[in-house]
Image 1 (cartoon, rainbow, N blue to C red):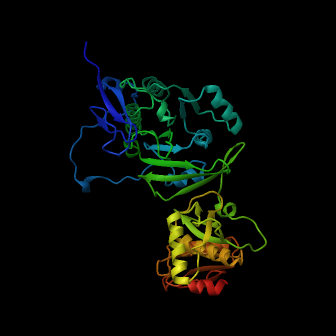
Image 2: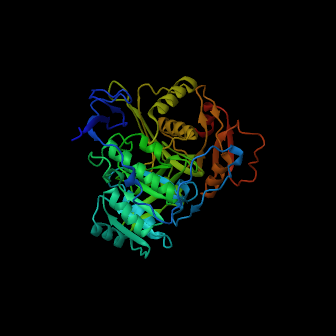
Image 3: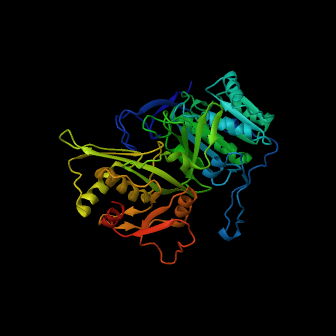
Length: 458
């Protein structure tokens, strides 16, 4: 009888070691090595899922780059415009998409809803976590009927590929990749070896059959997708589904995309009948108010190709304790400290003994540097306790010397502000001279330094 071979795998990054060590030499994490059985792959099992319609793989040969014919990817447009946006224009045939998110955030609901809306595409939904009755209850709640939707509750990849061979679906959704188990690996489901092997089998199936596959994945406590980091390198697209449990809004963000931009964003609202697409996020991210409140400023930002106006809220109070507090929600805390230092040095405002709290309304996280000017104005508004007109918005990056720097795609930001009824927008005077702002029915105020902003507003 042959001896069973074992190896130790890091559960964080997938690094393989012959013996147990306390610290992983690859990712420097402690106590992440777990012993797993290692079994050589059996090539016969790999071919069991293949359909007779799939062409035999051609023998590899060297070709010149100029001899390769450029073919545009074939895409399917789904009824979900937000999903089309984050995927770069629709589902690409033969693509492997990994979707991560916290438990209970709505990943299964989102893709069950999208699968049911694809009326003319034969879809197979594979669930390793829920029973058929549970999925049926969710589908009834969504109130969408589809004759081309099929369901399979199975975790063994061998059984799954046998059913795929019979059904020959046009789209496959796996919920979730951590529950699948390959007979080629003897370790438990969810281990590094199993995730790597099952994802590899799904990738080969997607590429050889030209069938798009969506893999729903769990995330770890620090927010990264569970499993080895090689999982994210194997797939074509990585999507992150995020949101606060206390808010009804969910954000689908692109982390990696071989077929489009990685700066795209899709926004949904969770309702009793599923997820509703939010076509105009600016209206939900700006609170409806009539009176002027201090510490509130509107920023004209851009996420991917989509302009958005978000509300920045700041509160500056006298510090009661010895060390002043600095708290930021939805904004980089180090960036906030940098802007406070600019106001101290270039503007002469003493924030040293003040508590500063900053919040981006709506529960979203903004990384666009053009929000700097709105943050700075909200801080000054709260510091002076003077309100800023709710018909004004801001778009500009603040430099360390106190100058207001130009930002990209300013015309789109101005057009979005005009569409939402704003009367005035503050931007940098360093924008290109060739831009024609006379075509807009909104007053464009160009400023160069922080002290000029203060004089104009207060």
